[in-house]
Length: 127
Image 1 (tube, rainbow, N blue to C red):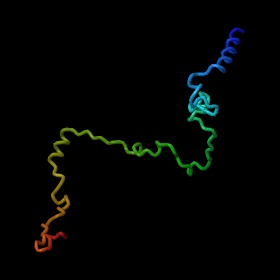
Image 2: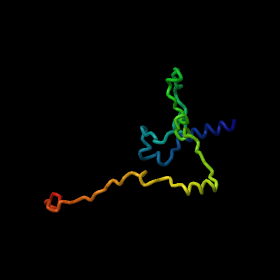
Image 3: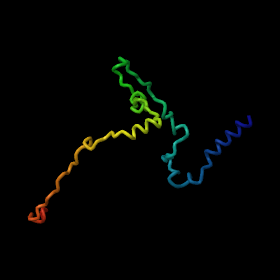
């Protein structure tokens, strides 16, 4: 009983006693609305929750686009890396073989020298 009486007394005092900034200035105007939202108004619902339940269309599994990442990940589709262990005899055999000849390489692209026309006006460049 004493707790409810003290709370009602506090409510009555709050009605008559104002904070200093509410007596004068823009806060004293009856149309003033605080820019800070109340705790119950700040975040009414969690951003991760959806208001409506999603509708998932049902169709043939072959025609539905698969949004899973791992099925489209090309790094997982590579063949396994093949490793070969060479013995000393294999290395000596490879060192004795000549695998490339000069004719195996493509010919050099530029085989002739470029001659400039010295008599051209401006040395070939327009002024």
